[in-house]
Structures are given as structure tokens and as C-alpha cells.
Image (cartoon, rainbow, N blue to C red; front, side, top):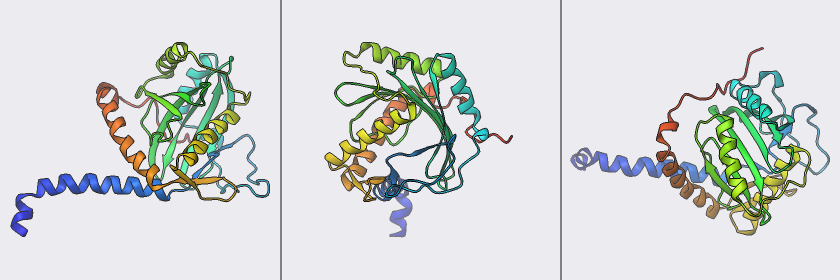
Length: 261
């Protein structure tokens, strides 16, 4: 047996490592509690919530510690004529130390979120452009990979590690080519983001891809079926990264770390 393992170690390694990775990815999808409304507006730092709704945990970050990445992208977004919607933090402040800004185009056809920080100690930085379509789906153009969307509500296009000018140019090409674009009903960018998230979660519930973890609908997790879809989506994103290999290892637009004022 020892001789066999020594001879075929590479084969065993090539099987066990991907198996272990996808097992962890599946378990994270199945057990992690995700929030239907994952952001808190930092301008209103009060943590108290109405009765029957989720009470966010404490430790809200100082808005002045926004990261270099978010500063750079926010300056670009403002220069492109988008209306500022404020600074937000991820509501799971103990695990996800993320500060972001939200924006909306003057015609209310595009909402932008740009954020950075750490998720369970791992660095993250990402910008999303959202546009609603009249079939209930959204065009989404982003500059990073993530867990994807098994619901099919998000129609993703990824341009890795680009400045906002390039990102919005690609997004606008999609918007202008789509015949069924509509404006957001919300005038507040953050409320529009919450509406996007609710639409996605409701669709996953209807398709058996997610389950509620809170009786008020404040938290949810993937079902086994949904977690499997997340694992399968990893391959699609890996292939997409290969087609943009010259962008993958670019120097980051800016640091994800909070500023120390």
C-alpha cells in the first residue's frame, strides 16, 4: 500500500485536493447564513431595528477608514456623473469587514456598488454595475469573480481588474444593446440594491435553490441543490478568468485595507 501511494501520489493528490475544495465550497454554501439585506448605511449608525426584524451585530466601522480601492473607484464613478448614495458597511461586521459606496445614474437605469475589505480575514475588492430588465433579471457587469448566481437573475459579464471607466463602458454597451431595459423604481440607490437582492432570493426560494434561516426572511442559506450549482459555477468563472489571463495578475486598482486616519 505504501509503495502504491508513493508511486501514484500525484494521482491521489489531483483527486483529493479538488474534492476537498469543492466539499468546503459546498458546506459553506449550505451552512452559511446570508442576509437578505446585507448592508447598513453608515450615515445612520444606530443599530436598533424594528421589532420582528434582524438586529445587526455591533462594531460598525468608521466611514473615514474607507479603503484606497473604494476611494479610487468612487472618484471615477462620481466623475462619470453618477449620483452619490452614501457609505455602507456589510451588516455581518464580525466576519465581513467591508465598507462600500452606492451610486445611481441620473436616468436610474444603473446602480453601482463598490466595496473592499476582508471576508473571514481574506482580502476582497469588487465593483458591480446593475441594470434591471423588464423580465425581472438584471444585467450585472463586475470587475472580479465571486460565488456567482445560481438563480439566473443576474446576467453576468466580468472584466477583471479594470478601472471604472472601462467597466462602465462595457456595461453601457450591454445596456444599449438590450431591448428590454427599464429604470429602477427606487430613487435611493441602497433601496434599489435591497430590491435586487430580494428579487434574487425570492427566485431561488421558488426554484428550490435556497431556504430561509430566519422566520422573518432576514437570513437564508443555499439548499443542497443550490450549493451544488455554486460549485458548478466555479468552473464557468475559472474558464472566464483563463480568457482574461492578462488581467488576472494585474496589480490591484488599490488596497483593500482600511485607511488609518
